[in-house]
Amino acid sequence: MTLSRVRLAAAIVVVPLVGYPLVVGSDGAPFPSRDDCVRLATPGEKGDLDLVFGRRGTVPEAEQLLERVRHVGYRDAVLAEDGCGRWKVVYTGIESYEQGASSAAEARGAGLSPQIEVAPP
Amino acid sequence: MTVRALAGVTALNVAYAAVGLALLFGFGALGTRRAALRLAGLGYLVGIAAFGVVWTTLLVVGVPFGAGAIAVSLLALGLAGVAAGRVRGERLERGPPLVPATPSLLVTAAGVALAGLFLEALFRAARLLSLQEYDAWAFWVPKGKAIFFFHGLDEHVFTTTPNASYPPLQPILDAAAFHAIGGADATTLHLQFWFLVVAAIFASAGLLYEHAPAWLLWPPLLLVLVVPRFGERLLAPQADVLLDVLVVVAALLLALWLRDAAGWRLAASAVLLAGAVNTKREGIVFAAGVFAAAFVASRPRRWPSLAAASLAVGLSILPWRIWAERHGISAGAPSSFDSSRLGGALRLSFEVLYSNARWSVLPVIATIALCAAAAWGERRLAAYVGLLGLLLFAGGVWSTVGFPDLAITADESGNPIVRYTGSLILLAAVTTPLLLSSVWRKSRQ
Image (tube, rainbow over all chains, first blue to last red; front, side, top):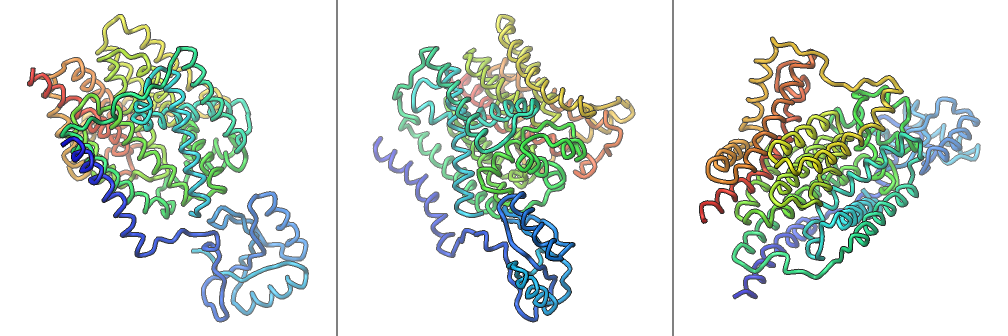
C-alpha cells in the first residue's frame, strides 16, 4: 500500500513535469545564439540600415576598434550594445543598400571588415 | 539566451542556494540532509540577501565588483557558515523521509506538480522576455549595468536616475547575473527573477510543510502564483517581487519562531529583513512592521533577542545611507501629512486590497482565516498576523497621504499602492495555511 502510494505520488509529479517540456519541445524550442542579433541586409533592402564594423565582448576592445574606424574617416561611428551582450561599432547614416555597399567597399580597402545590417527596431 | 548564458546564470543561482544553506547550517537550522533539501529554497533567499547586503557595504567602501570578487565573496560567506556550524557542533544526519508516505503524500505530489508546471511555463516566457516595465529600463537595470560595466556605484548613474534613494541590492544581483551570463543581456536577466520565484515557492512550502497539512498548504500558494496582478509581474526585472518575498518569508519565520523560539529562525529572518531594507525604501517600513508585530505577539523574555535582531537589521542599512547622504540623496520618506487626503487614501488602500480583479479571492479567504484563528485557533499567531497586516496596510495609507504628488488612484502610473499591496497578498497566501491549520488542530483536540 505504502509502496504503491509512493509510486503514484512519483507519477503525479514526474509525468506532467517531464511530459510538458517534451510536448513543447517536439514543436521545436530553439535556444537563441549571438548570431540572432545579426541581421545581414540583402541587396534591395528598404528598411533602416547600419554599417557595422565589428563586435567586441568588452567596451575597451570595442573602443579600440572605434578609434580605428574613426581614424579611417567614419567620424560619426559610435558604440552600441547589440542586444546579445556584445558591443558593436556602427555607423548609422546609411540611406540605402547601394550607399552602404559603396561605403563598405571603401572601408574594406582601409583594412576594416564592415557589413551592412538591418538596423534593430 | 544562449546555452552558455543559461548555464552561467544557473550556476550562480545554485551558488546562492549553497551559500545560504551553509549560513543556515551555521545558524543550526539543518540537522539532517533531508532538512537541507527541504530548506534549500530558504537557503537561496538567505544566500541572495547575505550576498546583497555584504556587497552593498563593499561597494560603498569602494571594493571593485567583478567575477573574481563575486566568487571570492560567495566562497567566504559559505565557509563562514560552515565554520560557524562546526564550532557549534552541527552535523548533517540522514534523517526521516522528507514527506512520509501518508495519504497527504498524494496531495503534496499534486501541489508540487501544479507548481512545477506553472514554473516550467514561466521559464518559457522568462528566457525570451524583453525589457518592458518603465522602472526596469529607467533605473533598475541601468543601475545593474553600471555596476557591471564600471565595477562599482557609478556616481553619475546612481545619483541621477529616478528613485536614487533606492538601495543597490537588486542592481548588485543584476550585475552578478550579467557576469554569470557573460554580458549585459537584459533578456536573459529575466531568468534571475525566475529563480527567485522558484525559491520563493520552495521556501514557503519547505517552511510550512511541518506546520500545515498539505491540503491547506498548497491551494493558497498555488493561487497567489496565478492571481492576475501578482502572476503577471513575477518576472519584471524590478525589486518589488524580491522585496515582497524577503519580507514575507522573514515574517513567516518569525511566526514560527513565536511558536518554537528556535534561534535559527530569528537569525534567518534578520538576514532576510536586512536584505529587504537594502532593496527598497519600503523595506524599512515592512521590516519595522514585522518586528513591531513580533514584539507585541511575543513574551517579554524573548524581547532581548528580538531587539538584537532589529538592531542588526537597522545597522545593515547604514552603509548605503552614508553613501547616499554624502552624495546629496535624501531618504525619500513621506514629507508631509495632509489629513485631508486621509479618507481618500484609506478608501484607496482598502479597495485595492480587496480587489477581486487583482488578487481573486485570496484576501477574502485570508481575512476569514484570520478571524477563524482569532476565534477558534491559535490567538497569538492570529494577533501577530493581524497586527502585521494592519501595519503594512497603514504603511500604504501613509505613503499616499505623505507624498502629496501621488494621485489618489489605483492607476499604477500615478500611485504605487497596487505594487505595495503585493506584499500583503503574499503574506495572506503564506499565513493562511498556518492560520487555518491552527483552527483545524484545535477543533480535533
